[in-house]
Length: 160
Image (cartoon, rainbow, N blue to C red; front, side, top):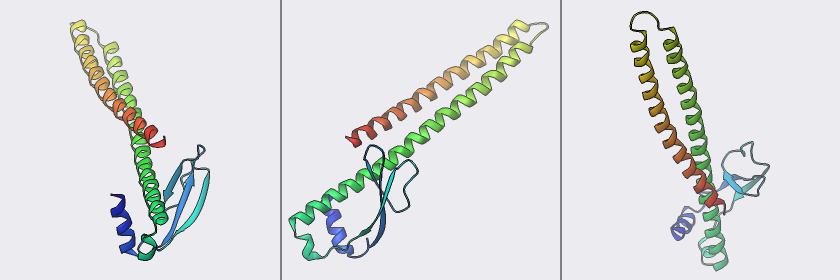
């Protein structure tokens, strides 16, 4: 795969010409981007892609450098993807919690307002709906928490 990237770079010859941003966070991790660095990154360097000729590609040092760069770029892209997934999971967990709290409060108010004949039976029906809602919420929350932990674990492995 790495050699394929090197071949594509050589074949494209100039297709990668242009500027890119090399961002560093507080821990020194790098992020490569075509757009300015996100706010959580503390340093930003603007660099220019260099065109590689066929003669350069046979140089062992250049090949090694190209492989290292390709790996760094791949890791950077994966980091961005994992950070986005973590953000989405956290947002989904927050939305699930807010929805659950709103629905449970509504049902609890309904239970509290039930009176009259057969109040206990009618209240029990609402309590049963509350229990079903809780089971559904816990299952969705557990699934999303597992996805979040998996993304965090992959991100930590990538940083090592």
